[in-house]
Length: 110
Image (cartoon, rainbow, N blue to C red; front, side):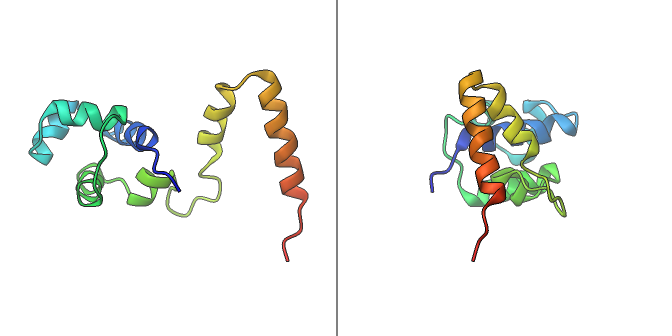
């Protein structure tokens, strides 16, 4: 499984903005540069687990959310991410994804 640092960065940015913080404020809280925060939010730098936990703690965002988009006790945590994926697909690809989803939703797992 490959780690998607761009998605993690987007979630960090969303959590930061949700608190009404600038990149400068977050960088001060973490004692890092704003350049580093910018790179993390763009997904252009890898972030280690220790730093990710620090960011989560400072922003009051769970590690589950930052890594996988899972909100606590949420059964439909992928809805927004799936919607964004679909928005970036052509109509033909959207139809293909829909057809695959229909097949998977009707599958019986043993």
